[in-house]
Structures are given as structure tokens and as C-alpha cells.
Length: 115
Image (cartoon, rainbow, N blue to C red; front, side):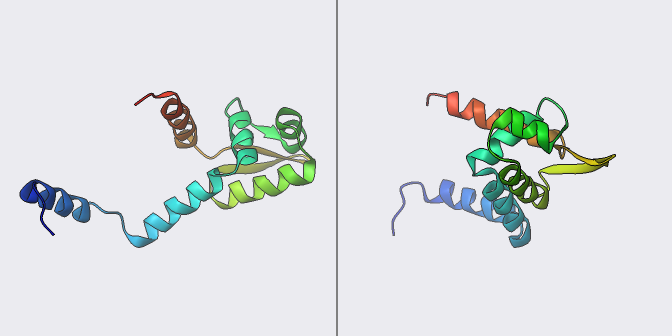
């Protein structure tokens, strides 16, 4: 195969290979994106941007049923995107860290971008 920019592209390929995350890290990132890829889970995350909530109030904010929201929260918690804590008889959920907010905001900005 012939490339009109052989040296430039070869250097870029070497840089990319040298800076490529490991297989396990890529798998973890892929799992995070997989967890973010469902619209009802995204609605939950956007709701939790405004502070921690129990399942009852998450259902109120996003609609759906308690069992469906609980199921989605289990997936998000398993992916390390939300965290939970007990408050009396309630389980209260919140975003795992500020990086989750940054990813949501960046995704929204990207969708508004006209290339």
C-alpha cells in the first residue's frame, strides 16, 4: 500500500501505539460507555447531577417504575458510575465523582457542535 504522507503517518501510528491504554483499561472504559449507552440510565445520571436522591425521588424525576429504575441503578453502580449509601431505611444514590458530570456535559456539548 502506498501512502502520500508515509513519514507523518508512520510517526502518528507509533505515537498512538506507544500511548495506547492497556487491554484491561480499554475494557473498563468500554464497559463504562456501555453502561452510559441506554437512555433511561442517562436520565438517571442527569437527575443525579442535581444531588443525591433515593430511588423514590429518582423515579419521580425520570418517570418509569421503581423496579426499572432500581435495575438501571444496579447497572450504573456496578460500572462505578453511581454510588449508594444507606440513610436509615433508604438507599441514597449519587454520582460517583465529578468525572461523571464532566462526561455528561462534554457529551451534550459535542451533540450541539456543528462540524
